[in-house]
Every structure is written in structure tokens, then in C-alpha cells.
Length: 69
Image (cartoon, rainbow, N blue to C red; front, side, top):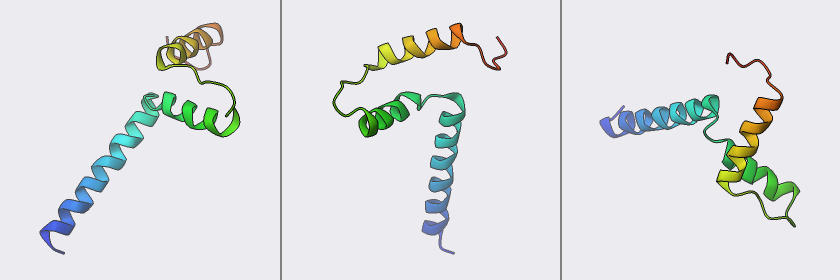
């Protein structure tokens, strides 16, 4: 295997690791929301990012499900 192939595989592995970490931490939740909203609610405008995070936080506070804090 050439050095370029090793480097390419390493970059791919790092990208996948970052994607997984963001998914576990919930950082990509807004993008997931936009994707879902675009598929199912195409006639309505989606919440902006600030509104989304406020709504998500309010829902988690009102309905805690398995959170440590």
C-alpha cells in the first residue's frame, strides 16, 4: 500500500470518527432536523438554528429521559 493510500484511509477514518462523535454529542441534530423538515414539511419554513436549540432544550427540560443531570 502506498503512502498516499495510507493517508487517504487515515483521513477517511478521522472524518468518520468526527461524524460519529458529533452524532453521539448531538451536534448534528439541527442538520438532521433540516433534512427531516425538508422531506416531510416542505411547505413550511423550518425553525432557524437558535429557535431549534431553544425548542430542543425546552423539550428536554419538560420531558427528561435518561439524562444524568
